[in-house]
Image (cartoon, rainbow over the protein chains, first blue to last red):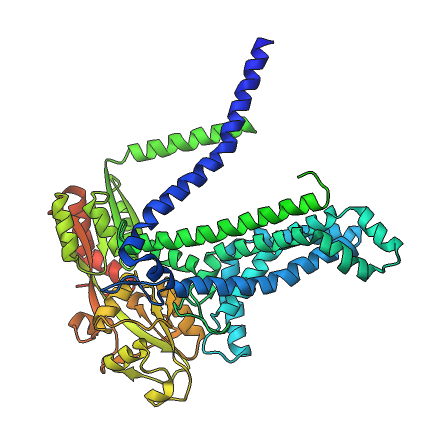
Length: 296
Length: 271
């Protein structure tokens, strides 16, 4: 008896430690980001760093303005949302409302398979197929543009958006639908006025998580976005998102130098952005559970 | 299943321990990605002939290599630029003494798409293109079309050399497509009719077209004779006068056989 209880205690401790390990790593990463990234604000000044429009990290004298990089990330993320929302939510609706059991069994794993393709493969596809295609289609000087990155990122975020939206739709209680049909609403009315609003916060969560997937994606944008550090005016211009700048430059930035610190500061900005996205998603999904009377 | 996994793990660990144990001397080479192919190839051949020496070669960039040498984390630093004064001071403060060895010459070819009829440009024209003063091929007497400027990332040694040899330290315009590798540049230039880019001679291929600069075509001969204006020496730095295995390896790189390997990798050997 006694032995059993000790064993139980040991297991309990092991799992407690494992559960807190991710918290430990999160805090560790945050500490490193702050410690390595914040010194640059002393050197350049916070607003000059965030709102500066020139990124010349290795020039003498160096200029560290990351506004073009922030806007680059913002553009491709916004573009990705325009792609992944119709695709992801649309397929979730189809899966949940229209698809037969067979179609569902076959489609859902296929859509989820999109998520398991390595990002470098997406990048390669973008580089070799989408780039020349866009170049010819719009008669552009180069096909490596924000649009190209948006299309690919949107495709990559689709499985996230689809499977979370689909979950949200399936959580809508049967009684909601039955009540709607009972008062004489047809299928379309039930879908647009009852089911989607009821699952709305779940779908919003899905979209926000899709966005945080898109903004953090690195390899693909490094390969297809073009990498020009200019403030983009249209989707048909090359951009240099934050992740691409970090990935391309970190390897050769001397450790501890201003350039190195500036890259860490960019990582910090990126981290805060995804952190905020995730918190918003969490808040919305919590509200949604309460609204539907599900256990919070 | 679990037992099998443990067995494999134990096996792998003991094999790797055994392998690393039986090598007496270890040389760590870190630095420029431009010098990397030379270091890899020569290390490979050298190790075949000297089984008692283990050379591990890593990239990372010239600055990374020199920093590692200063901090005592490597035996040889590959670099595509000469060491900076600030780095010499840091090294002295750490009690390290970097000694330069020129191991090859590298030319940077300015390249355009194969469909582009342009055959020659002057250094000044190229500088104006990269500064954004010339933006259309019609300004250079060609068919109108926007010039797509492709550059290497600001932290690469090739960018640094290009900045010194062509740009006179002027800034490359922000609208340039910054690529993380020589292959990336070659790829874009190959598939973009209006593009101009630059790559190390070692990365020239059939799909892109090199330009004459100030009337000189990039080639082994023109780089070695110093006629081609965009060429640079490539270095390996050792700490102090090289000794033992490090000396043997560097001597091998500089020997006729080593320099043949340099040529095979697409750079310009010194002999």
